Length: 92
Image 1 (tube, one colour):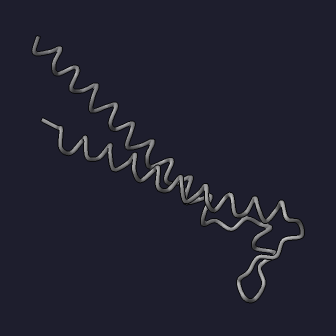
Image 2 (cartoon, rainbow, N blue to C red):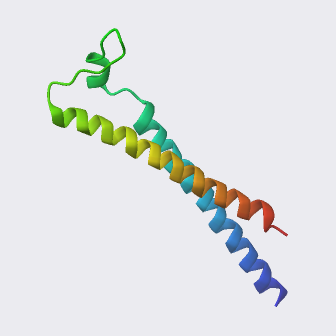
């Protein structure tokens, strides 16, 4: 009986460590998507730090990547925080 309870505890710890890792990866991907400069953005940036696009679809893709990056950073931080709180507050 005591071994089974310890095994459940170890499984819970492993699951929430995986949750923390997944949250970190999602946050990192969001950071890369939002803050890294793609080649087209680097080449088309003017002196006033505005990006000039040749086509409207390119500009929309650029805006969508910035918004998606922000959402992924928020989601990754939320998942990471939940995983850390569970590991910290519910440990034996």
